[in-house]
Length: 199
Image (cartoon, rainbow, N blue to C red; front, side, top):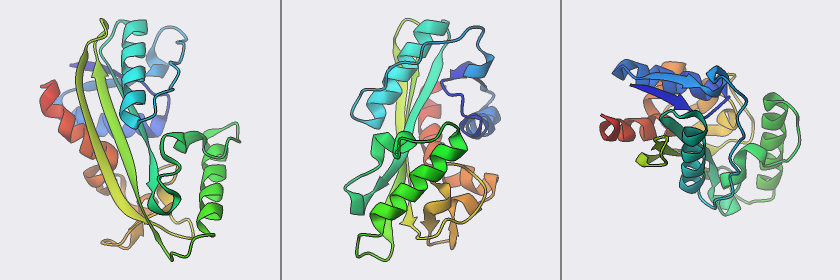
């Protein structure tokens, strides 16, 4: 089976390829499409809704079965922020590295006003697979629980990974090896849930 993953994020692509490749599913990213694609407007109010918009939109544009995800960080002390706005939380930066740094800084600034030493949080990933005719083939959702640490740690991963602390292993998500992260991340949970639906 071949699937187009609706992302230009190389980190996401590598994570999905590592997990689905073991099941004989070939995954390519948007950078391998033959033409520049119009990006669907992500105006849904849930992760699942945005994943659907992207999967259906890119499947129709490309004529290929498409998997899309919408994912982000949900922090209890901030009433669910940054949520669906996770990637553009701070609203500044031209590169992914700059946006990630600004988002992390803003999150820590907002949390500095809370009384909690560490704030419960989780990464959420909603996945959707759609065919070119607009049919939604499968959907799933996964979460990755932890606490927001006050000081970023680790260099693996991207986004808020340096801030999500995992008490059971004493590490942040960004300090996990690729194999360890793929065994428990929100995206890997969602992928493992969706696999039986694809097969």
